[in-house]
Image (cartoon, rainbow, N blue to C red; front, top):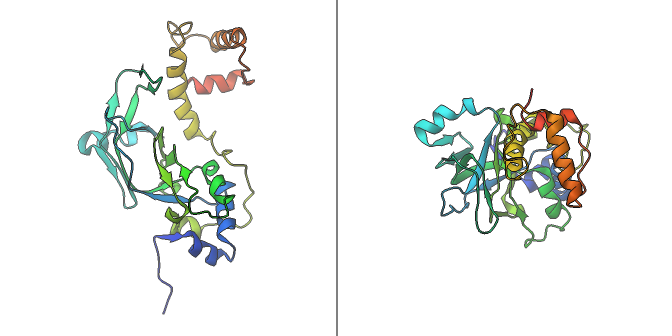
Length: 250
């Protein structure tokens, strides 16, 4: 009898196929060599109907489906109950609500960012250690990535982690390890930052009146560096081209 074709494999199954331990599988995920997903079905809807941010790789690819169905559904995941927040605001608890898309329901398989896997990898698989999953991605096998951010109260145990069949079938044993989180500055991440950073800058009084779409990048840098210096904040060195990308400039 031929082997059963599965849509996904638990971590013990993956370890058996790769002839290694579950800790080794987690290490492959934490070092960006194997995409590990989790089954999600317990995100709580917030009272303001803005439970978590949704950032699209290309918004135009999804906007018609969102407007017509108020959901995005594939054979492995669904994101639903969308809400577009028109005005950036800060509540009494200093929580920022961005001008962006929000959604209120998740179900299915979502990829875990590599840095979130370290705690479980180093826990000796303690059943009480869980990932505080503040951020998720749609599986890369779908090509166009959707980023789910600013999730509150979602904790994932090792038993909920899986590897999708397409990811396991294409696993490359010679792939080079990359430190956890080093996969962040992809074009998809830069696109997300180009949405977030201008909004955050607008919350600074000295910057709020600037037209960030046209003002010289060097002026923005100078203002931010001056303010950081005045407040005794150690601002990481960032070149002008990186600033331009994060401000959404071509």
